[in-house]
Image 1: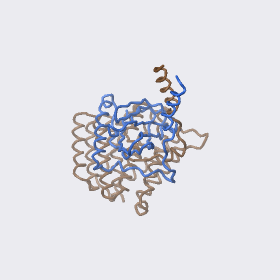
Image 2: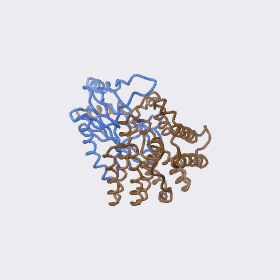
Image 3: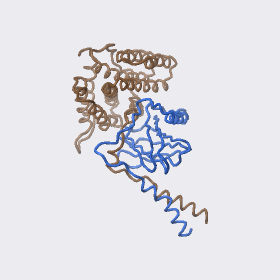
Image 4: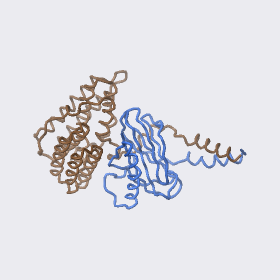
Length: 160
Length: 263
């Protein structure tokens, strides 16, 4: 391993450390209205892909929540969602972006803000994280996109 | 040499991209989207089942009125009925599911929902006839969200919030009774959900002043405040049976008062 190779590795991973955070505000950023049906064809297509993907998990006893979180994922930025999980339940959080978008990452954090030890799954334009809730309380689901233009995203979750 | 380079790249990538802990500011700034951030009673009951499967049928209540004097009272009771539906699914009681489904649709109709919601009532009955408990949980979730969307479409966010609050107050009432019957710490601790209650209160707080001042919302908020307090013992004090008894009694009082056909 040459010094040049090590530096190349560092240059590839360092941008991830500089992912921009939303500006601090007194209250959480307004959430997209995931309760209203979207006329956006891209969102409909994303949700359809997710439901198709989630069907396999349904065979393992996971139930799909009807609600979803959707919006736009800007390049290099993160979005975080607060969810309330129950101790002992197992969950899968599944997110989709258009298939030609790369680098979608999903991470789940526990009530103390620590990574919840999720089991990752990746496929083109899809990312999923499976977690067993050790404690009841608020957890945080973080989505991060890669470099490139802002892309629509959709997230659903399943439980058992 | 190439393999070593790839391995070290992966190793470095792992070190630099392993999730760092979230800061308090980052957690506080997380978004809240009600249809995803607030769990369904089905999730709560799934956790209760793991802690010790209760006799769900013994936790049923008598059928209530099919109409209420105000829309706010109707919405709160509709939410509570959805929880009754989930209980019947847990009990795998097809007839009870159908009975509750009819009551849910009757109240939804009173709130002026569209035909697509009313059709759900038939779906609930069909799935109950087939004993498709899996589909029934999803159908109840979908029905709740459709009614909430219908209320949002009528620019009546208060009713959407009350449906969710009603569902959870009834769920907590039932959950606390189940936990007390079970007596296991794992069951009791499932009742400790101050963050969820705070979220329900936040939804009510964001309503317009005029809506917030009504008697049903005021009473609901007072109950949620009291329950949140009971779920948050002072440092050093345990969260145990005594607190769960208080939670049970407080939520029972509200559910009972709201389901009586009085303005």
